[in-house]
Length: 244
Image (cartoon, rainbow, N blue to C red; front, side, top):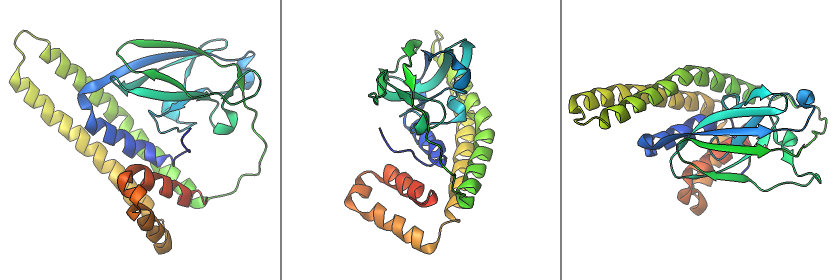
């Protein structure tokens, strides 16, 4: 499983994916049965390569449909393999096999209207620890939450625009004029989202010391960093802000 990335990375990575494959959005519906009684379980989340393994992402909190059953529909890109697991909000509360051993990542190949049914055998029980106060990380998370709140309706509007694109293309004589109008609306939405995310990164990076920035520069310039810039940047930023 990939290491947990800083919450801010979900925004920027998701936007990069959007640029890469705007016309290939699909929705996958997942249903999971959890151990009963589930009153002690609290919220149930899904985490995976579609949200950079954020174990307690509020956008991926599942809805309780009945006792011991939860569901969610997630936006993904068509024809891609995604890995995932279920959690109760953290990797110390992730699903386990019946014998308390770790399980392999679940996966699916995305396609429109795909429905998946899973069962969680057991939850990992977290070990009580005294939380270490990290004011800088708290500040970054507060900024992240603010940006996500702003972007949520914008991302929904992008999906509505995509629907309009498809509906127009399915007409016997698709309107080029309407297509151009939709292009203009889409670019405004993308520009707004990109500006919010880069603004968030600018403010977050301003909290780093000169030494921390130099350490990140060194990582990025290494051969592995050049070949995988995005993950190198995100992992090093995560390590610094969480004092790892």
